[in-house]
Amino acid sequence: MNWKKYLWIAAVICIPASSFAQANILNAKKPQEIGVKTDEQIAADNDAPLPYAYVDDRDILWSKTVWEIIDLDERINFPYYYPTDTIDIGPNRRSLFQVLVKNIKNGTLTDVYTDSYFTEKRKWEDLTATMSKIDTTDYGYDQINAGEELSQEYINRRDLTGADIEQWRVKGLWYFDKRLGELKYRLQGIAPVAPDVNTIDTDQVDMVELFWVWFPAAREILHEAKVFNPRNTAQPISFDMLLNARRFNGVIYKEDNVHGDRNVKDYIPENAFMQLLEARRIKESIRNREQDMWSY
Image 1 (cartoon, rainbow, N blue to C red):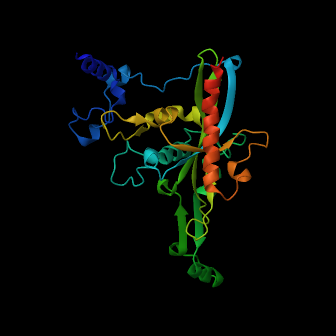
Image 2 (cartoon, rainbow, N blue to C red):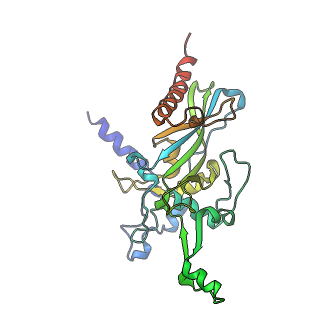
């Protein structure tokens, strides 16, 4: 039977035209027309991030908040890191960090906070101290001490780029929906982690969270930003879909607890292996919770 073939054809036909990587690429008469949709395409385009269903507080039978680290050295997490160099690449391909920073700069993304509890908002002007460093060389200080005007050549500026991001940290809520009878996950926040710009070029490097983004407010932006699909470049995947589907490998480094949400490394210090086992224990306890709901 060829039912699999027919099913595959039907799935391809149902894919909206807006999901393709470069609109109008086969009909473009000039390079500038690539990616520019026609008026008919714009009118028929109803592409939008899949809205979250409303969940009543009374339907949440159990929940747990966890914080995870997404290590960008792991191959499965590469889509969040690349591309790092955008000089010789099209404007439709950007890393997750570049997408967020661009929208924070132009004011499209405003739900930016200092920590994962989303209590204090930040603007781009407030983030420049953690994103860039301006230093004066010894020759520049000699000019200043001599009463001369400081030359621009003696000023060093170091800006953090997408290539400097080493981790992403995500905060999410696992909860058991008693109406659906299943364990579900809802992403709440995401933060880039990079070396401290003040110590990035030294032997002693400290890792810092640059900012936290309230994820529900950034879904529309992340839906428009597409991730390279190595299996089929005609059907890219959005960052919103990638994160909501948990298509990453994360290690739990903190959970909500009675000790003020203390970090795993706070009660298991200087032992990376035992910290990893503790992270797996927390993950297994969440999985077992769903199984225990169906025990009689």
